[in-house]
Image (cartoon, rainbow, N blue to C red; front, side, top):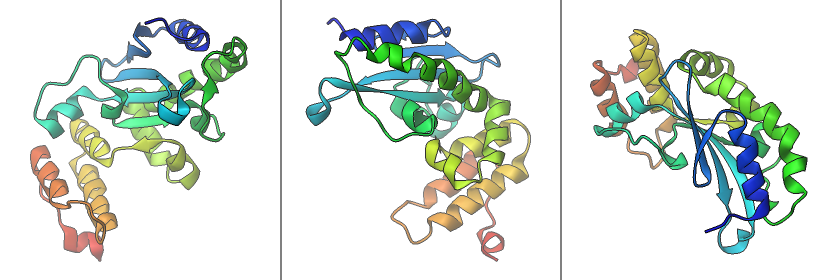
Length: 205
């Protein structure tokens, strides 16, 4: 099925940044070969039909394999990305859906895409930069713009032989989620998959 004019042009702009399209999803492998970088030109449905937005995601195959105990997909859906944002939010604005049939939209979005898609993956598209960005992202504004799985941070720290840091991430996650509807046993299970146990009483003190 042919894409609307704006989506077609947006895909071409993102292709020029080195991404390869599969439908309205575009993929690139990071320089460290450990992250699948993804841009999703997302068509709207129901009340958002005729509109689109742009999702940004980083998929960590090794983390997926540990957590799911199954082989990672070569072309993951953005819902499987452990680090996600939307372009308009990451660029500092509000969540925005644009008219898919407007011939002017691609030209309007060109500078935003060229500036902020590379910036997202510079910060969140390779293992070293992900861990650095996570350490810097204590400010609430950054955390609101980018959603990061703490399981993935713990797994990456483990891969970098930083098990004490990984343990602290999971212990803090456990303490913060107490009193919610989350299944806290999954955090213990994940810690065991990484080869260590959590000391929750110490984390709470």
